[in-house]
Image 1 (cartoon, rainbow, N blue to C red):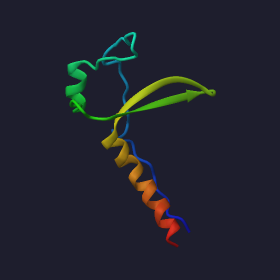
Image 2: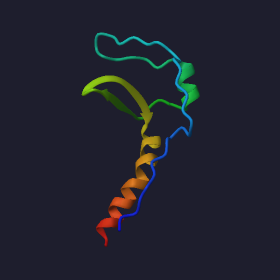
Image 3: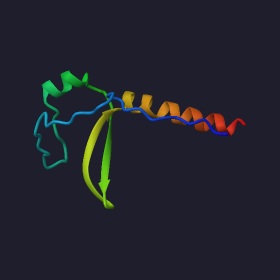
Image 4: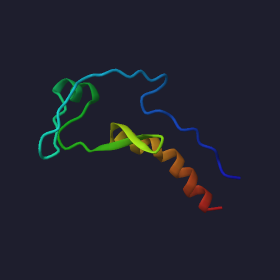
Length: 88
């Protein structure tokens, strides 16, 4: 029987959302994360971010950015369970 894995938020529970900054996209599709946002999230030059698109009713409605390190930790457990199932 496959092992069950309960997904956890990378931020802990409960989550609280707030607008931290308003940013613009330039003609090349680029944007700048404000220094305070980078500092609070520990984002440094060269860090990779995943763009996560949220759908509602089949339409993209919003997006989130997540450091790849955090995303990797979130999927590591479920992937480990899937890989172990293949060893059975």
